[in-house]
Image (cartoon, rainbow, N blue to C red; front, top):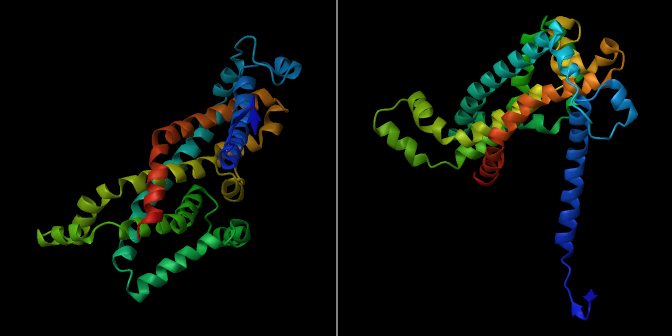
Length: 282
């Protein structure tokens, strides 16, 4: 390409990358913009111009939402399910992964590893019906059953990441700890856990995003009773609750996004670091 007699080389890959980044940015920024501006509008103002910035801050949507006694119950359900699920995941997934990684050459542990990895290749939609039947027969259509499902589903991805990461850590450090008199559990808790902090932060952020925002599993497990609803189920049933008051719906979306955005903002730098470490080592 020539401009005023000067030849300018155009890097096709750079242009394509910037176009893709721009499209990705718009796909995230536009819905977020619409949610934020319409949460601060009255229903009439939003109807007059859905895309315009609000002329004045309308806070009645927030007052109405916070004065709804059911809303805080749904927030509590989401918080309890997320916190307990993440606690169990960070307790059991690294333990199982450590046992597999340090005994990987043994046939039994290798079988367990590949058995768990098979879950990565099975679409979740395929197993939903059998899972629902199983949970019904076990009388686990409640919050406890949902937490157990999150723990089970997290094993596939979590074990894959942790095993590769742990196998890349130097074995000599553990051998030195054993020589100094540490038991296996002392070596795990005092030596390995601090070294696994990037991967632990990655799992906590990724699984917190998934569990807090998940809609499919709560719909199948908790939809029988309104008292057990999580925030995504509350938003799903918003039409019947508030007669198509979509400014109230946007207010609920905004408030449900805030906690998990804070978690993501605090831990997002560990995600790339942990995923890269888990992918390269091993």
